[in-house]
Image (cartoon, rainbow, N blue to C red):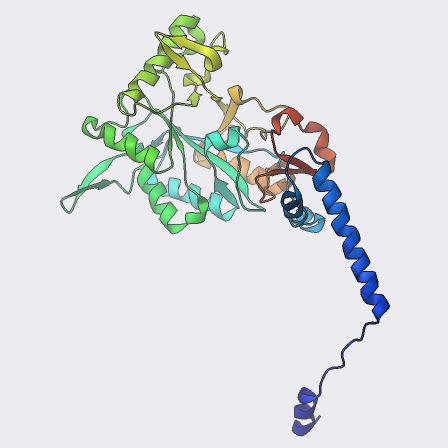
Length: 361
C-alpha cells in the first residue's frame, strides 16, 4: 500500500453498526428484569438493602475468583518472634527479620491485627493473604531507644525500628504486631511509659504473657488468675485504660480450666480475653471454619530454614502455600462478605458469620 493510500485509509470513517427499535426494546426489557431480580434479592435478605446488594453483584466475578483462588476458609499464619539479635533458635538478625517481611510482602501477604483476625474483621485487598505477627517476652531487642545526634530515637535495628522502616517503604503491607510482654517490658526502665504509649498510638497491641512467665498448667485457678491479673495490673500502671484482649501461653501450657480466660477475676480485676495463643507449629484455621478455636490458636515459629528441623517454620509453610495455593486464605477484597469455594461450604460455621454474607462459587 502506498503512503497516500495508507493516509487515506486512516481518514476513512468506520462503518457504525445500526440497531433497530426492536433491539433497544429487548435490551431495555432485559435491564428491567435484572433490576427486578436485584430488588427482590435486596428485600428478601435479612440485612442490608439495595446498595449492599449492588455492591456484592459488582464484586469479583466467578472467573476472577477462580483465577485468584479466593478462599476465605484457608489457613492463616500467626507468626511467633522472640529476639531480634544474633541468629538462633529463638532469634532473628535485624537483616533476616527484614528479609522475612520482604518475602511475605512479595508472596502476597498483608498484615492484620490479631484482634481483627479473631473477630473476622479482615480487610485485605483481593487476592492477598492476611498474616499476623506476634512477639513474646519483651526482649530489649524488640524495642530499644538510642541516642543519635543528640536526640532519642528508635534503634533502627530493633524489631520496632525494622517494622517502622518497612512501613515507610511498603505502606500497603499494613505493618502491625502484638507484643506479649513480661515485667522487664523491653528493658530501659526510664522509657517504659514512652514505649508502651508509642506502641498503642501507632497501631500495635499489648498482650498478656502472665506476670512471671508462669506455666499455667501447674497452677490452680486462683494461682493462674493471680498471674493473669498481675500482668493486667502491670500494664495499667502505664496505660490505665488499656484492655488486653489476648494471651500468649508461656511454654504453650494451657490452664486446667481455660474458662478463666473469658470469665475469671481476681482481687477485683476481670479477665476477658478473646484469644489464647499456643506455641504450636502450624497455621490457624480461618475464623469461619468449624475448627477455629480462638482460645487454642496455633502459631508458626519464625526461624531460619537451616534451624527448622521439623519443617514447621515460616519458610516451610510459605513454601507449602506456594505449592498448595488453594490451602491458604485468599481474600475477596470485601470485608463484609465471606467467599469460599463451593466444595468447602460444609466447613463454614454459620454461627461465626455474624452480619457477614456468605458467598460460594
